[in-house]
Length: 590
Image 1: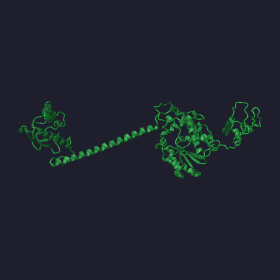
Image 2: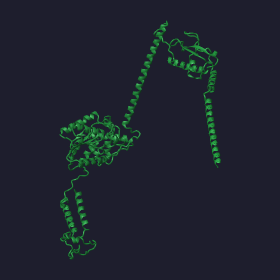
Image 3: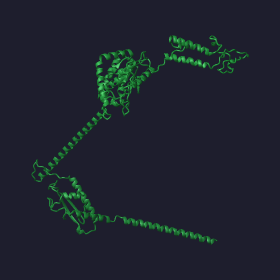
């Protein structure tokens, strides 16, 4: 009110200053308005002339009387009005508006705290229900992660929000506005109240910034049971009445480090917006934490900011019609009833605060990171368990297949008249039959291809063999494997040392007899390593000496080039002949 009166006073003074630049002519005489205005600094001004040519006397400032200045100029009028108004204001302290006949302005600006005068709206403060992170004892304050669904309401939090809705319903309060933070738990709580009280969606108003919880910097995402007492002790010891101290340690992930004063600025902004935007409404404010509504209550009641934690809200708690008087009464009650618990909380927080401050940055690991690491270890253990179970299953299936093969082999031997006990193990081939068959098939292909290259050689060197191959130990699937090959070749096909088939021949020695016949696979003795290397080099040289068609291709290209040369020579001869004929014809005409 005092500010408004000062503004009005300056307004009157400004009018007086402006009026000093206007000449003291009678505004009713059009002839006087057309006259040239004289400088204001002169003490004696020339008298203006009216339409009839008569001089109009103008009194000097020294000659003006207190009752005559109103008749001849505006400056005296405004001096008299301003002087009488200031005197009246100084005497009574009332507003200057009645003097001018203008009503006082009703617009509101920033809300002043403490709120000694009634607010335009009725405010019901509430903390959101328990979130999933709070359920596992994680304190999340980073604004970037507030909307994550990992911070949504837990089942217990939904029940707490429903209980708060029943409190509003029992008090016959149907909120016209539900202002809520964009934190996931606050959004869910607002939706529960909407559904329980059948509030229209148009009454739900989100708040994007000013209702965010106080960010605690480096202590973000740590255990709430351990960190919250440290924050309470920090504010109690260092924040001060205005909350400008007690700043948490900085963090490198973008989490702010707010003091109570920083949070109070945001709360002042949201209250000023609501007081300007609405009037006469029942407004429910849903905060994601308990410190924000407690600090707002302390601001309304004029309680020191460092004592705001006395009014801390529990998850899902709602307080109706928060004003100055009820809040002061509640504050006194909590101090009397919970004095010992609050003192114990502060003492516990001091010890925890000293511990946190003594730790290095590398040792301050968020509880969320610890839980993520535990989850990773559990996933790896689960994967190893499943992998071991899979390998055990495969081993069991392999053993079952081996037992079936053993039984089949016993049955085969019994069918051949060989007495075999069920407990007697039967030797199995070290390589599967398909592998052996595939290796011999590859050798047969190589032998046939070599035979095709040796066509036309001495037929007396051709031979036909019935090869019998037995596995080590003298037993196989049928007592031996027979390979019938007929080829024309100059000897055994050279094989490089270390090849698959050469190794197989080293392992599976050629038998001299079998139950199917006495013809061996090879009738020549086994060659030494040096001999086989020589055969391999000779085979490679023979392959390189073979005609691969390159000579024929070069001859064809040479013939094409020769033909092109002949054509070009022929064409040049024809051109010379034609040119010679033209020359002769022209000479004859001459």
